[in-house]
Length: 138
Figure (cartoon, rainbow, N blue to C red):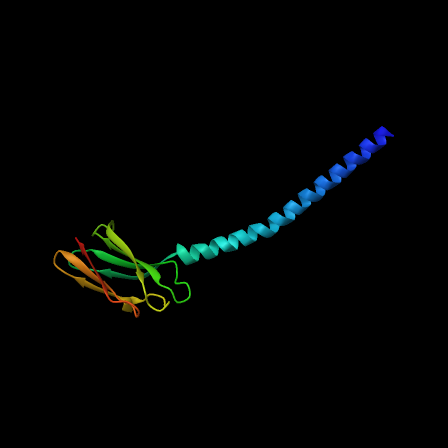
């Protein structure tokens, strides 16, 4: 009698353990794709870097690269990054700022590059902001 109860109890524990393991596997099979999709959305919204334009100075070989970081959420600002590269292609200086352009994707129309003798003047303009003016020295 005692063996029979113990045997039944062991079988019930094993069945419950198998059911829990099966439920956990099903849960993981559902959660893993959801986590991957959410991770991709977060990456593209906040971290993906797209080059909008590259501008070169033929006299000294310096280059300015204009990039979008992530994307605008609805009608919010877009984060942009501007990097000055020397004649060897190494980043010399950079800055990032927010572009308030009514949620639109940044284009070449949002940046003006003026090459001066010892520096470059960069003007970032958007529909909903006054112009931001930056200067980087060579």
